[in-house]
Length: 444
Ligand SMILES: NC(=O)c1ccc[n+]([C@@H]2O[C@H](COP(=O)([O-])OP(=O)(O)OC[C@H]3O[C@@H](n4cnc5c(N)ncnc54)[C@H](O)[C@@H]3O)[C@@H](O)[C@H]2O)c1
Image (cartoon, protein in one colour):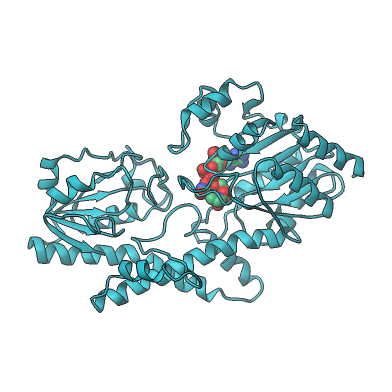
C-alpha cells in the first residue's frame, strides 16, 4: 500500500470525511458506534440480527444503560446507517468487528462468529481498508484464523489492507469510565497498520497504548481477565476460610484496601458471570495446550469460582434449617437480582440462574426479582427458566417468604423494605452491611 493511501486515510479521519463500519451491535459494538458518531464520523452499523437494526432505526435502545435519547440522535442522523447487507461494508474506510467469542459445549473457544464475519468480509473487502478485531480472543487469532480468511478475498493483509487488534475494555454501567476515558490498546500486523489504528482510535479515546504486534494486543485482554478471575477466586476462597474463623472477609478487604500500594480490592460473590471473566481465561487454557503448557492458576480459579453457587446453596440450606426450622423442600425463597452484576440487564453466565435451577431441584419454591430483567430470555445453559417473570416485591409478599437470597446488588433494590420484612436474608454481596435488619442476616 502506498504511503499516499496512509496519508489519505489519516487525513480522512482527521477531517471527519471517513466512514467506519461496526460489525456486531451488542454491549461492545453499540457504544463504539455512538463514540465514532459523536466524534463526527459517518458510521455504518451492521448486525445479522435485524431486530437490532430496526430498534436503532426507530430510536430505541435495547441495552438498559444506554439511553434511548442517545439512540434517537443516532436514528435521526444523516451520518448513521444501520444495515444487514454486507455489500454496504465496502463503503467503509475502517471495519471494526465486535462479534461474540463464547466457549463451545466442551469449553473450547467458539470462533464461529469471528470466522463467519471474516468470510463475509472476504466477499466485500477492498484495497486501503482497515479491519480491526475487538472481540476478546486467544493470542494468534488474527494471524492464524482471521487473516487467512480475509485473504480469501484475493487481497494481501499488510499490503492491500491492514489488520488491527484492539481489545474492548468496556465495563457496562460503570459510571466512572466511558469509551473515551478508558485507554485503548492497539496492535497491528505492520507499522503502517499501527499508524492507521492510532489515527482511527485517536478520535474516540484520550489515550492510546501501542503494542508491538497483533498477538501481544490479544494477550493483553486475556491477561486482564485472567487477573480478575484469579483474584476473584482468591477472595472467594478467603471468604470460606475467614468465615470458619468468624472473620468477615468484606471487613478485611475494606481495611486492606486502605494500603496505598500493593493491594487492589476484589470482592467475593455467588460465582462468576458475564460474557468475559468466566469465559476468556479458558481461551488461553485451550491455546496453551497447543504449546504443551498448562494454565494452572486459571484452572484452579475456575474450580473455586464455579464452586461458589453450591457454597451459597449450602449456606442457605443451613440457614433455613437453623432459623426457619425448614428443609429446602417446600420452603419459599426469593432470589433478588438475576443479572450477573449490578445495574446491568445482562444474564449471560449469571450465577443467579444456576442458583434458581439448583434450588428448584432441591424442592425450593423460587421466585426472582430483577427490574432490569422482567423476563428470562432463553439461554443455552438454563432453557427451563426461559419465560419466567420477575415478581413484584411488597411487604406482604416478603413476609410470606422463608428467605431472601441476595444474588445481585442492583441500586434499584429496596433494601429497607427487605430488611424490615424478610425473616431471613442470605446476602452474597455484603449489600445489607450497616442496615437495620429485622430478621436474621447471614452472609454467604
Ligand atoms: N460485554 C462486555 O462487557 C465485553 C467487554 C469487553 C469485551 N467483550 C468482548 O466483545 C465481544 C462482543 O461482546 P458483546 O458483549 O458485545 O456481545 P453481544 O452478544 O452483546 O453482541 C454481539 C453482536 O454481534 C452480532 N453478531 C453475531 N454474529 C454476527 C455476524 N456474523 N455478523 C454480524 N453480527 C453478528 C449479534 O447479533 C450481537 O448483536 C466478545 O468477544 C466479548 O468477549 C465484551
